[in-house]
Image 1 (cartoon, rainbow over the protein chains, first blue to last red):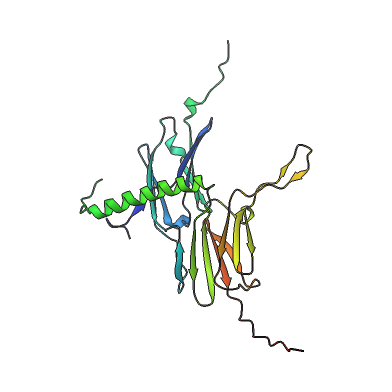
Image 2: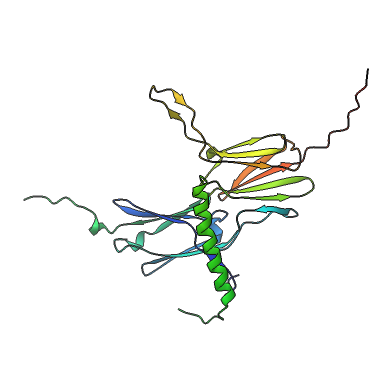
Length: 113
Length: 135
């Protein structure tokens, strides 16, 4: 399926930082769970998809404003991330990847003796 | 792990152009108030319109059928004015697609598939010629 002629483009990505975690949102219209691969190697999060969108059979394309590409992108995760907590959910063409911050980086209350 | 692959300069150029097009498409969309891109397909009996709407569901989009056109717009959240009365909000975007034939409204349907809205609009049966008697 993949070879050097396969074209990949970078999807739109947004990152939100919250006190306890990071959330990355990738826009992947037309992509289902079976067509997306997510890997973590070191601190690098890699997303790769295989185009799944099918034009309706027997119809003639008369106006085209979007294509159905393969998406690929690599994101360097912040150092505060706990890499064991990476999780992803793909719904309605939006992939949300959540990574918690390491517990020792969280603010904590210090008891005064 | 690395693998040796044959370098194809045209592939690199394609990738660069794709990225360039996407960057400027987003800029243009923002300048125009951002509206979703559509693909339109046609055969003898129907037209199919695909609309790219990642993250949206049926409750976020309004569809209205005219005799020979379809209007797709976002469904704004309900708002209230300073007196607490419901206030109609304008949709953030709206697209109107003209169709080359009249649509059978009863058979039209639409569904979301992974962030793409597919609207199927069958052609209405041809209206039989109606003879008018001159008095």
